[in-house]
Amino acid sequence: MKHNSILITGASSGLGRTLALTLARPGRKLWLGGRNTERLEETARACISRGAAVHLKACDVANSAAMAEWVHGTGGLDMVLACAGITGGTRKPLGPDQPATEPEAQIRRIFETDLIGVLNTVLPALELMQHQPRAADGMRGRICAISSVAGLVSFPGTPSYSAAKAAVDRFMVATGGNAKKAGILLSSVVCGFLDTPMVARNTFPMPGLTDVNSACRRILRGLARNERRITFPLWLVAGSRFMDLLPIRLAESYYNNQPAGAAGSMPEPDLS
Image (cartoon, rainbow, N blue to C red; front, top):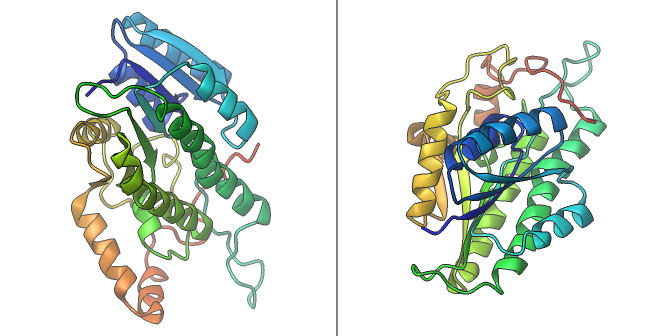
């Protein structure tokens, strides 16, 4: 698998940072993006210490023009990892006859980052790679976007997050069939909870919580195998698929009696 030039969004923390550190080595170019400049520079220093050449971009993935300029400005990419994302859940009801809801600002920001931000990364990368020569393995490049097990279910605790991740997974898989004929792999990562700062303040049990280094190894192994959908933990993915087959009434009865993702159990995301 050729991956000498790699672009990673969300590289300032969590999975994006871990992937950057894992991939950093002499002779490799890393194009790292994120909103937090200080943390992004920390990631860069760590990658440089491992011998990689690093180019930074402080950018919000929701900015389509800036993302397109950044991606095309690399001059060519072997791999793109769209890791930028935020999550958030419903708030407790304001009164006895009120529902648990998500604030409108949170809903819009999650869609802007987790769905539109992925498109702003993937679409210019697809355009760029179409003009690249095929490598020895017949591939022009690989593009990977992080979805979630939450995208497999209509979870009452995280409505917009579940919807955005579902759209990411369907887009990557549905588009990937035609893209692969042109030598471009599109992969969707359907994973459970990862031990990253994004979930560190959750106040409920997180079944299947996966070490971020193990997740990183699984993702890179899946890309090397040209997997279109990279899933883990398998038991959690299988269970989620089963839940989505149940009548809505039964599924909601189960979800609403679980501590995971109950209204008010997740911290409010940074919407800036």
